[in-house]
Length: 160
Image (cartoon, rainbow, N blue to C red; front, side, top):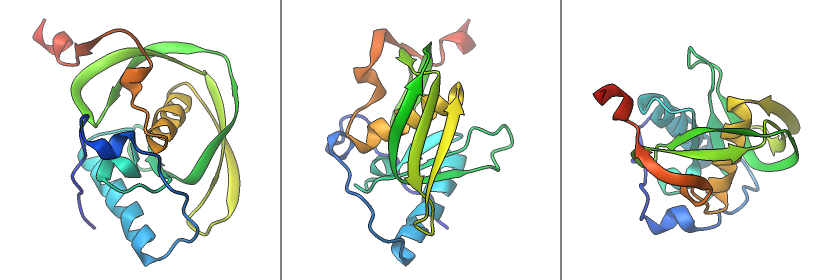
């Protein structure tokens, strides 16, 4: 399909609330494929529709090492959380930066698939973090609003 431009911090679309998807038509299917292509091209873990300028409640995530196990979440809602994890977080919309963020260690989400069939899915560790991070995007929240301490260069380790 197509690689879309990823909006960066400062773009007002990233601070707006996304609208629910009521049906998966050709346009939404193209958006899903474009978002997956964009995610893989950028070597990301997750991408929310507002990051490509579309205010729809749609998220794609792939935490697999091979990058071949995409999770598509339409209208996702966090229904349960437990535990806590604190670690570095980055974002395709804030290139070159990382920050320390505390998130739940286990997250259960309820969402719809491409056929608008409802399902629930539970994730721990990185997947739980990705669920929270990407769903925040749908509500106009960037991870920098949840960081403790300063943002750091993600290239610092390479420079040492």
